[in-house]
Image (cartoon, rainbow, N blue to C red; front, side, top):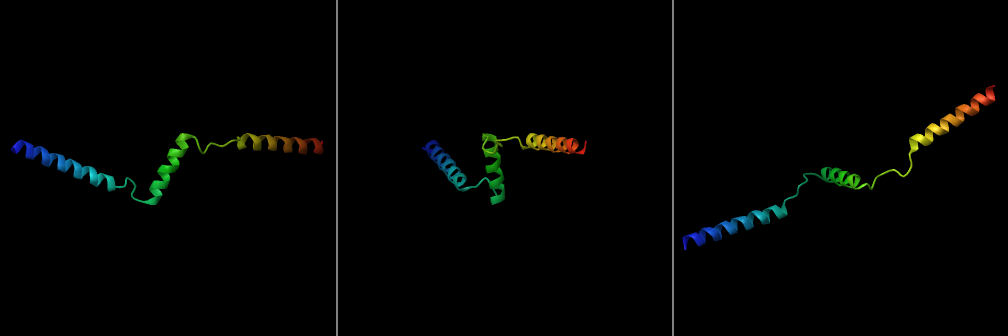
Length: 73
């Protein structure tokens, strides 16, 4: 009888801990939530750039400088 009561009390305490954990939020502020959300989306690959702008800018500068050199000569 005492063992059963102890088991019931242990089960009740475990249920209470589980219920309290359900109400807890793992983020303390909305900024922290947003950072975690963006980090998760980046890990999934949602924010990848479709074009490499650095290469396009470099190529554009090369064309402009080439044009300037051709006009100057």
